[in-house]
Length: 372
Image (cartoon, rainbow, N blue to C red):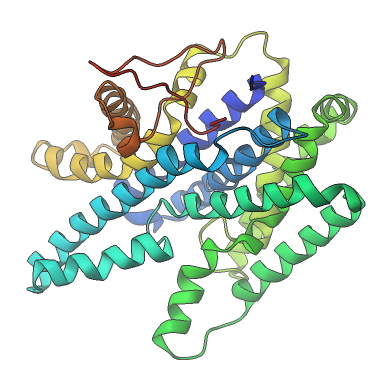
């Protein structure tokens, strides 16, 4: 079954991936965002994760509006879920080592403490994979039943659900129990109601891509103004302390992230050709997203004696470039090894349907992020 490609998604995927890598590089250098201007910039950069959720559904809806591709679940389990398990275990091991050395806890106990939280609760940066798997299942349901309902009603309903869900956790406090604090602190991120509006918008825009393009042209001025207005709203609300969560899981970020999606799609549509660096980073985005925190952690330790951590924005730039390029190199090498794609994910196809490098002895076909 031949899959249609949407060139704008290469741009959106690349920018989303790079924004998250830049966010984490910024926080590594500037003490986790405690500096006011870093906090503001970092908060706006969190729009990258909602964009990933949007892309995962737009691609499916655009490419397969009428029926589901063959081996739908098989490919996603092999090339997305298996890497999730591997990286969840890897980061659990690294955190376990740190806990064991700093607190004197037995290594296996520390490893297990993090492992089950990572794999079952999505308690690490790979949590977005659990979100998109929920939406893969919802996509199958929409394929069968969405035609029975008015799209406007579904969009309005999903927006209300999303706002009420996020608002509940944004504006209420948990009861004084460990479980409640954990839910309010992290666990509510993982469930689909916190992202449902991105899904429904992506579903209908992907199925009506030509109409979407025309509307963006018609309202081009508003598309350029919206990110400024919604971004200012986010910074104002954050400055007032009305919402204390510094993440994309905020009501105001719902508006900003959607406005950024519209802006990026509009800008990408105006390009005669997708810039090579954006196409390249899009192809490696899955590996960059999962690997870059590991490389950033190493960079913090390795250059400490050379003072490279204290160069301000130059440190941010060096670590950003290093973690992006380093992640891509690791992913490229892994995809040359038989079975490596099951661990690190597959490299995405290019804009011209180019395939990634073959493994050394046994061919492994490749795509990632928007797997058919």
